[in-house]
Image 1: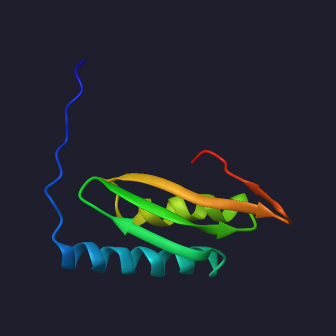
Image 2 (image 1 turned 120 degrees about the horizontal axis):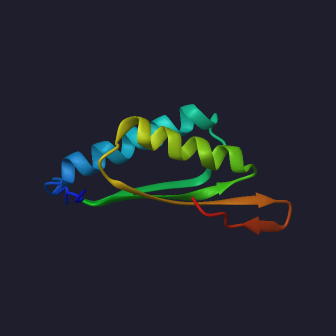
Length: 92
């Protein structure tokens, strides 16, 4: 069995900005605005989400929200889970 390489056409800047805004809206809905300093960057290969939250569950919901909208780009979930003074950088 051979794997197929899937190519994604380059996203134009307007679509990238629109997609970023839509992802932010969906993440906020899924997590009830529980991600602080939420930032989403989109390019033609990857979506990078960063921010901070108090629960790992919200980090998981962030992943779910992104994949609910876009499934053909790689996701890098850099949301940090903070409990008190400690920051947990769990793998996505």
